[in-house]
Amino acid sequence: MSNRLESASNQTFEPRIVAFFCNWCTYTAADLTGISRLLYAPNVRVIRVMCSGRIDPQFILAALREGADGVLIGGCHPGDCHYLEGNYKALRRFKLLKRFLKRMGIEEERVRLEWIAASEGDKVQRVVNEMTEQVRKLGPLRLFPLPHPETHGNGQQTPELVAAGQGGN
Amino acid sequence: MSKPKVGFNWMASCGGCEEAVVDLDEAILDVVAAVDICFWPCAMDFKKDDLRAMADGELAVGFVNGAVRTSEEEEMAHLMRQKSKVLIAFGSCSHTGGIPGLGNLFPKEAILWNSFVESPSTENPDETIPQPETQRPEGLVTLPALQDTAKALDQVVEVDYYLPGCPPPVRLLKGALEAILTNQWPPKGSVLAPDVAQCQECDRRETKPEKLELKELKRPHEVIADPEKCLLAQGLFCLGPVTRAGCDAACIKGNMPCTGCLGPTSRVRDYGAKALSGFASILDAKEEAEIDKLLDQIVDPEGTFYRYSLPTSMLHCNLALTGNGKKGA
Image (cartoon, rainbow over all chains, first blue to last red; front, side, top):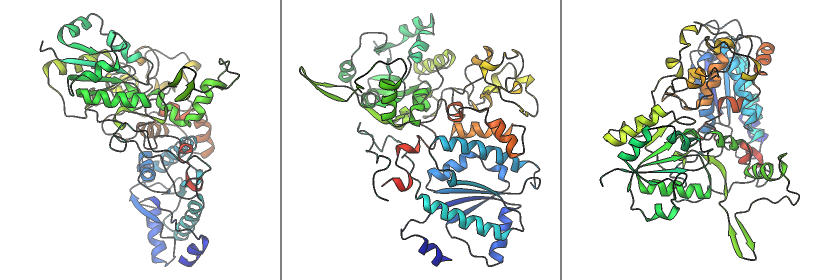
């Protein structure tokens, strides 16, 4: 596994992916992945939430702002939500947020929602590996630094930005 | 003699905030009697040098409206900060970025091109774009430079208080003036408005159903709204539930939905994200196709949810401005 990841790219960039998994299905599935000794990319940092409906779009933006290159959301399949409708809310929020992110120039593949049932340990493996590779291809997410009085407190212009299409690879 | 000195400055904004001061009506006479207005270029003959000549902290309170978009505005923000004991971000643009903040969706070159060449009302066959410096026979002519993005005031200098609104409601302005005169201020960094949602002050509150389930979304021009009933229940985008109170639901009284100018309450970090979250949750759709059909009716998600707050959102601007991913260095 790790060999495959290393040979996939000769760069040193390792994607950081923050995953929000719901307690009842996807987190349990991730446990199963481990118990079943299924290896998956170590690039994902899992945060357990009680329900995918608990995932505020602010969490996703905060993850991206704090240095994640991608965000993965895992919830119960439609109809299977422990709280009946949380995953439908998650889906609507996700779809609307994606429309906004697109307008903000953030690539589609960086934010992904998957329904993964507690028994689908192999799906956790597949999705995490797929997403790691997709984000690796995209490269690091470089958000515009949030302006702050201390970063340009002397009346200077914000640092020159690298124009799109220029610079290294 | 011992009257507190105040100053007002206007940056990247429409001028409505200056108007809000005049909206005090006859109360403005009490204001003039109680404070010395020592800097207000919009209304009286003051120059930048008058401000420069003041001692640091000479102004008891400085009101700054507008976003920071040009090099000159950045300079003025610092100057106002230096000369004011208490600096107040006055109005949405200064508080959260405001309408000029939507410029952060585009690179500045695109904005200049659109404004000076492409726009239908422009006749500019030479495609002349304003430059920060131009050599003319008379000498070097300079203009303030457009910066990469529009910023809220507290992204440039330290801000003591915020008076939200587009423009700030008279009621809130009066409250701030009272704070000046009695020298009784809330904790530093406070937004000088109630920390509850708009719905709390709304006359239509009783007509809001227990559970909102929107089957269809409408824009204000598509429908004549019932003047009594909760606008959300009528399928209109009323941002009242996620917006701070303080304006006595002025727009809603005018039968128009709240557009969120007073910004978030203190519990929210990213207004637009919270707003779109709230909206998505009250849509009555479960199947992907149904959801897409409803979402298609939101023609402008960034302008709807981030109308006044894009610069202070967690993303700040479109990624095209950074040379993201592999394209970047």
